[in-house]
Length: 374
Ligand SMILES: *Cc1c(COP(=O)(O)O)cnc(C)c1O
Image 1 (tube, rainbow, N blue to C red):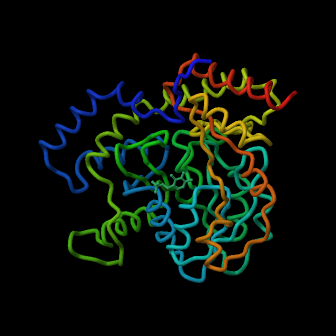
Image 2 (image 1 turned 90 degrees about the vertical axis):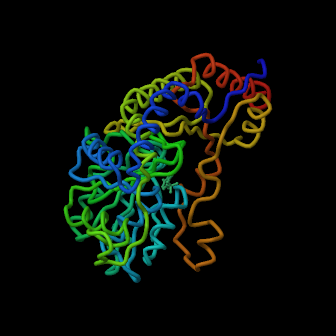
Image 3 (image 1 turned 45 degrees about the vertical axis):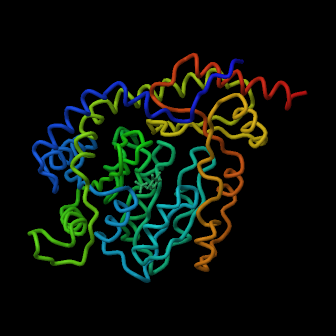
């Protein structure tokens, strides 16, 4: 094939479509100069809450702080344990550690790569306070059994929805199922800012009130501080951009789903393991992740062909140096460990064209034909 450059993500392709709108909105926000939790933050909180079908959405500085604020709002303390997965971006575990709690890792379902609910109960102790599943790559964890276990053991559930804006579980939106949820608006996410941003969603008035206070130095009324919080406020310019992009989210998620279908049609005969959407889920393909036993060779070949790929993530959290250095030794997580060695993320963004998908897939088939099947 020609040396077409197909990146893993093309942020410019998305920006070009809405550049005018963003510039206008930023002009307006700058003219108003109400930059402290201003009108765009307030409006975006309402719009995002309505989108997710929840009572409360609180705009925050980023996804890691959204997780930490949710944990702190749930009154997680040092000595508490939080059950989560190792098959995720490290921020999930960082937030648990920053709250003072101890992460307890469970393995994933090898089809969906999300928390295996069957493994939770054996990890529950008298210190367990929260279960923190991750809706990885854009697909929700199997929430019903997780909520059931939480109810039986009087635990809270915080969804890490940082990769799952608009994803659905049995018709319910990600972020509306647990006691609270955390979203990230990091620029490559399905709903991404042009900087940093995040959101906590919840139907619980008490949690909402605490998140609102904690993100702004523990105050409800300015300069009166009832809690020790910190600054984790959402920025007004980011909120202005995110409001515009929220209007496109459903279309862009649908585009991602169509691209996933197109990949699946072209790759089904290759023997590669393709993403599996659980019956009860509406996957929004933040990432399109395949699995291959010859990942490194395939990846190098695609790089040579000008095709961008990624590995999300090369080392599972419980095996990262930072975590091992804390002396946290988990029971082994066989699926997490073996699947980490095989995953490969292919180009995925709403503006990816059929021709580009075709080029990616024919390069993959060429590699298999040349180097694997002979
Ligand atoms: C992006 C991400 C986060 C952290 O979000 P930031 O906005 O980068 O802090 C947390 N968890 C998961 C699963 C993520 O993908």
